Image 1: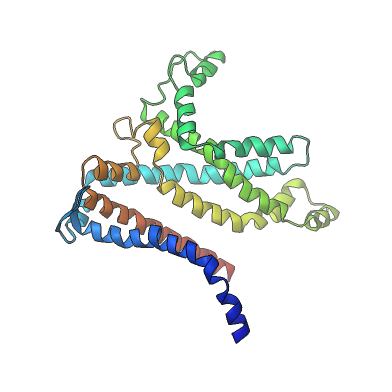
Image 2: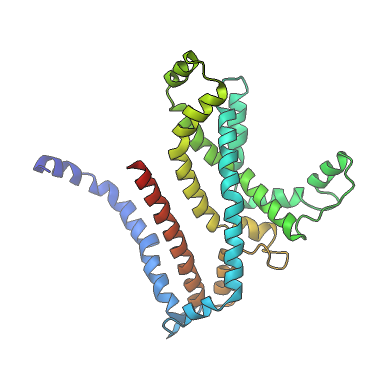
Length: 291
C-alpha cells in the first residue's frame, strides 16, 4: 500500500471511531464481563466469591437447563424450514408482474414493523377461548370445537410458531425478493427460446440463483430463533407447565428473579458457544461450496 492510499484510509478513522467505541463498550466488554461473572457467585448488587467452574458443573446437572435448551432447539427446528419456504413463496408471489404486486409486498412486510408487544397482544386477543377470533372462525365452518390454544402443549407450540412466522417472515421475504430482482431477464428469455416450462425455469434458473441468499437466511433464522424470548414470555409465559419455556427465559428468571447472575451468565455463555459453533459450521460450508 503506498503512502497516498494509506493517508486516504486514515481519513475514515474519525467516522469509524464512534461506532468502534460503542461496539467495544456495549458488545466486546460485556462478553468478557460475562465470562468473569460466570466464575463467581454474583448477585444483583455485587460479586460474592470466586467459585471457579462450579456454575458450569451445576449447569450440566440442571434438568431445567436441558429442558429449556430442548424447547429452544425445537423452536428452531419448527420455524427455520417453514420460515425459508414461506418467505420464498411470498417473495415469488410479490415478484409477479400484476397490479396486486404493491399490495402483496406491503401486506407481507407490514407485520415486521410491529413491536413484539403489539403482535403478542394481537395473538392473545385472537387465540382467546369462547370469544377469540380464531375460535369464532373455526366455528363458522361448522366445527364445533373450543380449542384452548394456550393450555395445550401442542396448540401452544403451533400458536407461537404461527405468530413468529407471521411477524418475521416479511424481512426474509424482502431478502429473497431483492435476489429475485437481480436475476437477469436474459436467462429466462433464453430458456423460453429453448422451450423450458415455468417449472423448469424455477428449478434450473431461479432456485440456483437464490441458494446464496437462502444460506444467509437460514443462518440468520437459526441465530434469531435460538434467542427467542419476548413473544413466548408475553403469549404463553413459557407454559403450559414450562413446555414452551425457552433458554433465554430461564436465564432471565435465574438472573433477575432468583438473584443469581453468576449462574445466569454461565448459561448465557453456553448459548453463546452453541451459536458460535453453528455460525462457524455454516460459514465453513458456504466457503467450501464457494471454492
